[in-house]
Amino acid sequence: MPSKPPVQPNKSSKGLGVLLLAAALVLTIISYFVAMASAVEEPYFSFEPSQAFVQVGIATSLITLWIVWALMLVVTLATGMIHWKWSLALLWAVVAIFYLSFCPSGYLYDMQQVFFGFPEANS
Image 1 (cartoon, rainbow, N blue to C red):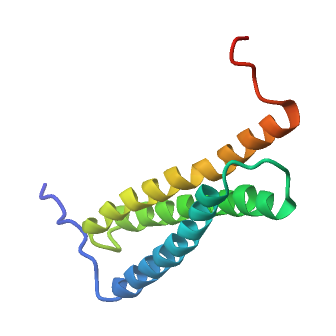
Image 2: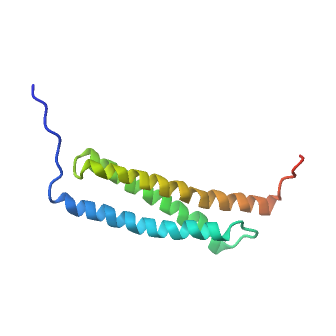
């Protein structure tokens, strides 16, 4: 029985590629500013709702959007709607999620230190 040839992306999939690229670009820009805000402002010595909103709320939302973007990319790759070279873009999503993960975890760690005190060095 002859095997089926691999599915080749068609011309209409260019629009999907442009959409994925635009979404990645927007997510990258916003993620950059959130991660840089965390790096500049850290360590946090007091609770401020605006900082908590950015470092926990927005950063977690961005992580979720990156995961959704990566899942969409995997589905479109698996169905042959876009070229396999797009799989390299998954590395960019992993890098973005990695750096964004430090925003909520770092903020919550600092708030733990603010509310419960710094641990003793010799205890």
